[in-house]
Amino acid sequence: MGKVSHEDKMRMQTLREQGCGAKAIIRSYPYKQWKLSTVQKICRRIDTTGSATERKAGCGRPKSVRTAPNIDRVEELICSQEGERETHHSTRQIAAELNISERSVRRIAREDLHLTSFRRVPAQIITDAMRQKRLERATALLRRFKVRDTKRVFFTDEKNFYLNPPVSNQNNRVWSRGKKVDVRPSRLLVQREKFAKHIMVSAGVCFVGKGRLHFIDEKAKVDAQYYLRRLLPQLIEDCNQLKPAGFIFQQDGAPAHTARVTQEWLHANCPEIIEKDQWPPNSPDLNPFDYHVWGAMLERYHKFQPKPKTIAELKDALQSIWDDMPQEPINKAIKNFTKRLKACVQANGGHFEHLM
Image (cartoon, rainbow, N blue to C red):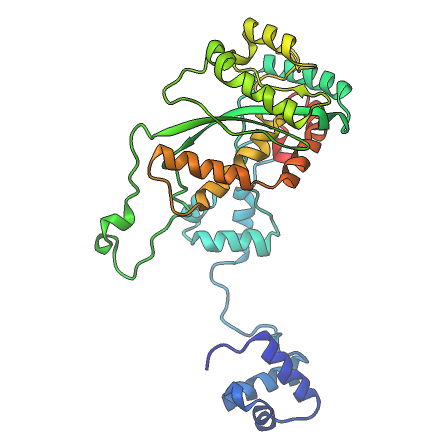
């Protein structure tokens, strides 16, 4: 018989408290096929400790790894020293230094030191000059936009999607009973082209819906002329379709967006825009596309079956994913825009996404 479950132990405890012996408990649940010796052991535990799930203090194998000296040493190494940033060691480094397993280090951190681990968050580089501009412009946008005003904003962005997107080797494991040399190469190797085929897409979203997904011509250079000729008129059509009563057009600081001809065209064709010197520089953490929409699409693309094999199939897959994207999470991301502006101001224009 395998390990007795917690629920079964509680059943035994209930019967034991009612005065039943080991054999009577077995007869009460004949289909469980409990061994008499196992039930007798649990009955003795109940009689000694009053619980079927708690062991008597001092029983079991003595600890050989999670000892007081090792716990103290892990506590010293795993966190940065006071007043000295980045002085912590990784669990792998600690395991090597103490000659114990990484699993033991993690157990000490979690169960003995009651520490919590946090995933590292990728972030853009922010110079002092960028920090100051982010602070000034985020403050100005915060004064300009209340939560209700963000419902009028049409957020836009562009992104590359690759035919063979990169995978995390940390989570993409191959399990085998034999050695690594015994595993077929086709199972171990993940082949990728040196210059992976991809397609760039452009799109816009607002509180009432999504615009169309616009595919940029392969090998096209998205400069101001291409942006004005092929993308911007279509994006404005989407705006007028979704927000006929008026909208505020948003775009980031890409050169094609900030070019003089682009800004002049927008002034002539949009009721209101966030101008090039109003949007905070280097701020993907403030665009709903970067902090929600593209990530949600990429997550669905990783799960998409069957996987696209050609650019045409990739376009069909992305269009299908885009069409099926629910609007409610997008609305929630847009409503968070002012919350993120406040966080940017509170961080003096620095990083704040690790706190969201």
